[in-house]
Amino acid sequence: MKKSIFLILIVFTVYIFAGTSFDFRSGTSGFEFLRLPVGAANIALGQATIESVDNSLALYINPSRLEEVVNWDIRGGYSQWLLDTSYQYFTVAKRIGDRKGVFALGVKNVSYGEFTYTKPWGYIVDPAEDGTTFTGSATLASLSYGKQLTKNFAFGLTTNYAMETLENYTIDTVFANLGFSYENKEFLKGLRIGFTAENFGFSVKYFDADDSDPYTLPIAMRYALRWDFFQSKNNKHKVVIEANATQYKDENMFGTLGATYTFNGFLSLFGSYTTNSSYSPFATGLRIKPSIGSRMLWDLSFAYTMTEDFGSKMVFDLGVMLF
Image (cartoon, rainbow, N blue to C red; front, side):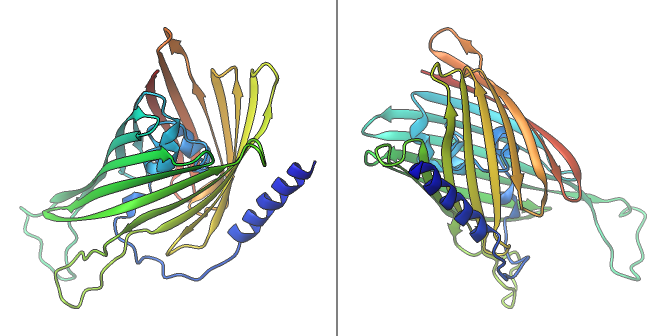
């Protein structure tokens, strides 16, 4: 009973803190594509997976959770996102050993679609110029490492190289993400606390002019509390709840509550509620995990979410785990 009361107080505190309003300068970040969520389960849970992710996508979400990879984990996905934006990603993780931890590689490519040139007021358009277009894209390459440092504490680090291209102009930068995970089974069994610090690196300039202002990356802090809410004695039924609070440097803090119901390790149903104004409050999805033999397990995830201004989105991804 004391553990339940303690947990409820922590969750309540997280959401009070997440609802607090802060004033920040909006529109002052570069490399905005870094905000795009990765992974269907992650999207279905409103990105409340900092302590729930258990595969190679942890290199993007919380690198300390790479510790869940037993041997190999390979996965990829594709999303047709807002307007003409689409992105693809591929990740692979390998456990080197219990003492050496887990290494992971990831690549994400974002296409911004096609744009039509705009002309200054009064500009006389040459017929040869009419309808001329250009494209934009971004690429992210990541190397990550995660390890269980102590019985209760795990740590992860992801180093990233990002390049953004618009027409003939290219800009690049390097940055890092940190992740931490803490669990004390003797004190509160089934409770896990996590924290990530994302997109810490150098400021970038989109223009060569000396008087142009540099842009920082979309720096973010995320705080997580995960609870194994229910598990049947035969392990057929399990319910996990995770609460996250997220603070970008140029946005108000928002909170997300995600719940996962798993049946027999085969079927998982996701649902979430978020106060992030960019999305509709609710998202949902599912995942199936059929096994192939005794050494391979693959999973297919699906997510359905609504955006504030651009309608509904459906996302799929596929992963394979080798034991």
